[in-house]
Image 1 (cartoon, rainbow, N blue to C red):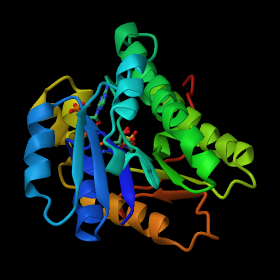
Image 2: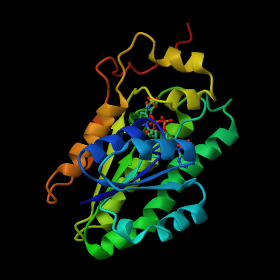
Image 3: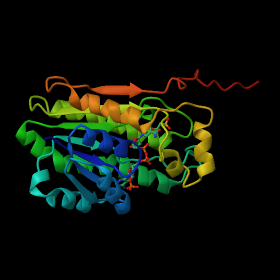
Image 4: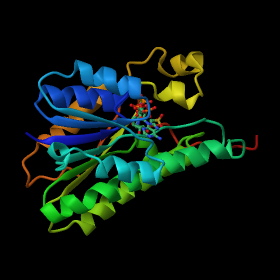
Length: 250
Ligand code: NDP
Ligand code: 8X3
């Protein structure tokens, strides 16, 4: 039986991944800050072993403790899904809240680094393992108000590529999944709990679902060990690109 460690398993993509991997017989290490949600999820996952860890990925010591305290039966991690992350705010850069930027950098960049760096040595030593990062279309495509969020996801994309270089010859796989518009708690978090604003993002659209993303993550993980899916960019059909914005004086 294989073991996956999924960060941000209390909601959205992470929760859907937990459900799908459990259905397919994977043991799970589930991490997030909301303990009640972790316990509820654990209770509903049948037939596999689940270890939950309350952990704020921004706190390096908590991350190190989470890994050091893993029960022996969870010590070998076959797959890390670096999913924990968030956007905060959509103001233009000149008006954005610097604290929001700090939280995004601390979570999406530093948190992902802490988890990766803590788990990676064992994978490299075992010459076996897979890291699937959750990036975003915002890492490749700019949009007004995407500023720091998009930049954190650009970091995730390039870090994924650089990890592949460093892990060359070890057999450890690294992939980046880059979703577009998807309905989860993402927008409620982005708009600081404003449900009306969050609902407006999806109104009249058919966004991706967390299950859509989980199925992609699972497909990537289930490829034969000789296959490395470098990146998957996925949007709902209702989303595409706009022309370049051109400011005219008249
Ligand atoms: P959700 O808000 O539904 O889920 C986010 C998850 O991240 C939660 O489980 C949350 O758990 C966890 N999380 C946030 N901060 C921390 C932290 N400091 N420590 C540990 N866990 C944390 O959003 P999504 O499922 O949509 O987002 C998952 C990932 O997908 C994110 O990285 C996001 O940027 C990315 N993404 C989302 C898209 C979308 O449109 N929804 C599109 C592209 C990418 P808890 O609060 O319990 O800690
Ligand atoms: C989330 C997708 O387009 O809201 O990463 O930035 S988007």
